[in-house]
Image (cartoon, rainbow, N blue to C red; front, top):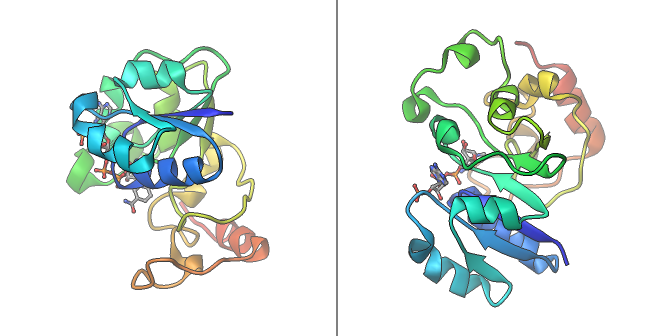
Length: 184
Ligand SMILES: NC(=O)c1ccc[n+]([C@@H]2O[C@H](COP(=O)([O-])OP(=O)(O)OC[C@H]3O[C@@H](n4cnc5c(N)ncnc54)[C@H](OP(=O)(O)O)[C@@H]3O)[C@@H](O)[C@H]2O)c1
C-alpha cells in the first residue's frame, strides 16, 4: 500500500486524499495549524487516514502532495528525501500570494520555484488545471509547465463550464491541442 503525504489539506488536498483512499492508498494529512485541526477530516476519511505535522507527512509519504498557497513555499518543511516523488498542484494568484518577482517576470515557472525548496525531489506538476478523476497526459518538463498555468487554454476549459462541478472528460488530443496553443 502506498502512503501519500499531504502538505496542505484544504479543498484540493482533501479531495485528492479522498480519491487516494478510494484507490486503496493510505494518507497522512497536514496543514499550517497542526494535526489536531485535521482530526475531523481524518475521521471522515476513515482508518487509512491520519493527521500529522507537515514534516511528519513529508517523511511518511512514499509520494508527497504539495497543495498550499504559493506564498507558503518558504514555510514548507525540510526537503523530502532525495528522489521522492512530490506532486505540485499549486497555482499562483496575486490576490492570495502577493507578488513573487521570479513568477511575475516569468523567469521561473511556479514548479521551478517550488523545486528550489525541494531540490532533490522528483517534482511533478499535476492536478492544478483539472477537474479531478481523469487519465494522464505528459505535458513536458517543469520549464514548460507554464503551458498549464492559471489562465492557459488547458486550465479548466476543456472540462466544461465551472458551473458543472463534476466537469466532463476531455480526450488526450484535446488536452494536447490546448497545451500547444498556450502563449506566454
Ligand atoms: N481550489 C481549486 O479549485 C484549485 C484547483 C487547482 C489548484 N489549486 C491550487 O492548489 C493549492 C491548494 O489550493 P486549495 O484550494 O486546496 O487551498 P486551501 O483550501 O486554501 O488549502 C490550503 C491548505 O494549505 C495549508 N497550508 C498553508 N500554509 C501551509 C504551510 N506552511 N504548511 C503546511 N500547510 C499549509 C492550509 O492549512 P491551514 O488551513 O491550516 O492554513 C490548507 O490546508 C493552491 O496553490 C491553489 O491555487 C486550487
